[in-house]
Each structure stands twice: as C-alpha cells, then as structure tokens.
Amino acid sequence: MTRRLLVVCTANVCRSPVAERLLRRALSRDVEGDGWSIASAGTGRYAAGLDPNTIRAAADVGIDVSAHRPRLLDRDILADDGADLVLTMTRGHLPDVVALDPRAWPRTFTLKELARRADSLEPPTATEGFSGWLARMAAGRQARAMMTGDADDDVADPYGLPLRRHVEMVAEVTHAVDRLTRRGPWSVRTM
Image (cartoon, rainbow, N blue to C red; front, side, top):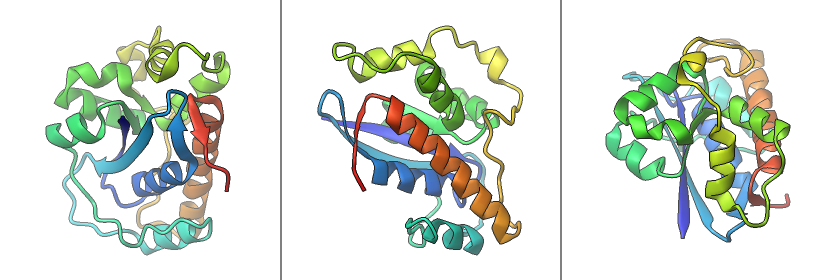
C-alpha cells in the first residue's frame, strides 16, 4: 500500500515544495511497511514561479526544487494526494483545506504543530500503526484554537524577500521535518 501526504502553502512556490522534497528524501516506509507518496499544492491563485532564492537556499541543503511546477489546491488534489496526511505551512492554510473537505480536519496539521505534538507525546507503539498514531496526535485538538496565526506553528513566507529569509525558511522547515520524521511512525532513510 502507498500512503499519501500533501504539503500545502499559499502559492506552492517556496515553502511547500521545499517541505515536499525534504519529506521525500527523509521518509522510506511507515512502521506497517507502507510506502509514501508526497506532493504539494497552494491555496491561492497566483501566476508566480518559484522564487530563485528558494531554489538557491534549497540547493544549499541538497534539495533540487528547480523543476517544481506550482499547483492550486482543489478537492481532487486533497482527496488523492492528501488522503492520509496534510501538512500546512501556517495555521492560515488550515481553514482552506477544511473548507474543501471538513473530513480532512483530523489528518490536517501545520508541519510545526505535528512535529511538536510528536515530540511531546510517546513515540508510536508497535501495534498502533500509522492510523493509531495519527489519531493520538489529533486527540484533543480544537479547530477554533488553530484559527489564528502563531509563530510556533507558522513558517513565514519568504517570497520576494532576500536570500537570507529563504535560508531561514529552509532551515526552519528542515528542523521541523527532522523532528517529525524522528518521532513519527516511519522508517527513516539514512543519508
């Protein structure tokens, strides 16, 4: 079986392509032996291409996003590419995802929120598998508490900003992906 993870940001030209590639590089299989298909999309209608500074900052950590083509999030992409897990770059993206499909809430988190929850709760058990772990991560979450921005959960958008902001974004996303993959129900690829 292949599980599907979707990473969401605003224009799908900076943060989500970087997170998508980092997750592809890090994840092998989950504890049940299932492989992962990882994709990304954006919530807004923009005619923007990838920011050259994102391409450069990602390349500095061994990630090639130069061939990425932005996609607009819609119901079909959410249902297919986000069938098992959706990770957003900010709390502001959560309502966009849930507006397309309210049933997506229990499997939709900001990247930093899920990494923090994984750090604060017990590691996955041998018997709970991915679905049990995800249910445990979602327990007690309230949508209304997640509807305002919070630096603890949001990765700032560096689009159009100087290179150092893109480098900071890549470092922040890398740190969150590392935390999540280390504490989640995955067999992590060794680099």
